[in-house]
Length: 410
Ligand code: ADP
Ligand code: ASP
Ligand code: MG
Image (cartoon, rainbow, N blue to C red; front, top):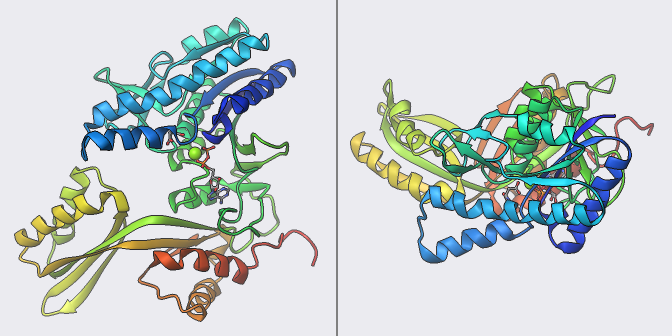
């Protein structure tokens, strides 16, 4: 008998039929003798619908009230699934993030989990009940309702699995595992049987939204066995683990991308100490995540400072940067919102210098201009115009022969 945490995403609970079918799956798991904690998302489209409602009232809704609003999506699905389980004769109880005492910091809309109490969940499990928990939500130190950022139910599930020391955290979604790239963009993408935490962390941080990045961080830190599976069809899915299961890991294991990047440049900044900190601190204070940073010396004691942010943060960042521009007597601020980031990821890359060459040649042959490059030991990222994103992903997938399984004999 195992203790399993099963998380079902928005599409998996997207309508009553789907909720009934999740109930059947949970019932089967119970009949196999396992204890089950279910973590749910809102029905697909529901969170977006509520965001749009709020935007009809104001362009800048209060982050606190946004969290009160958005958490209702998950509260709906936990009640409905519990009812569906009851009608199948399965004893189940729904619980909000507050009821399980999932504690977070006070950063509304992207709160971080501080602690998860297990007492209440364990008490219900002991009574033989399935505990159905609302994902994505918690309660702050000031007793406010908080949410964990888009896709945050994955992180709720992993945090609960870590706190309960569950045998496995299973993320049920609308794809049957982690692929070499998003199968919606490249139909030839191949499912991976396993992937290391390190690679999954890079893939998630570089845009592969199949798992929220914080869920992978959490799973790696607390060594939670994490598996991505389909709620629509059977199969073993993809196991995310520390082990590399091949004699030699493939040079490239996947391609990730992020369509929602924006790029800003502050030109003609005095080239002197503390300038980078002065540029970035108001942006950090506004809780805006900054990504690829490049500083170029242009002569005359001046430099250009360029970085990327999420497209949603573009306007606010631009306004902050314009203030910094005046303060530092810099020349001007430039921006581009139609930018996408494409990254090749692989732990086997570090000792293969040919990866960058293949990547840049492939993009060049397709006539795709590279605006910016960033590298680490296990990834190379480039910024390209948004309109070339699909072409870039598909041509790189082909160039690195990712559709072929490297463990199979040619
Ligand atoms: P859920 O609602 O279940 O949380 P998401 O939409 O958040 O599901 O995540 C699943 C989606 O992630 C898939 O439908 C797929 O389009 C996308 N995706 C992006 N990159 C990958 C990848 N490398 N492997 C699998 N799916 C990916
Ligand atoms: N409902 C939230 C979202 O759409 C959280 C989640 O689905 O994980 O982002
Ligand atoms: Mg998701």
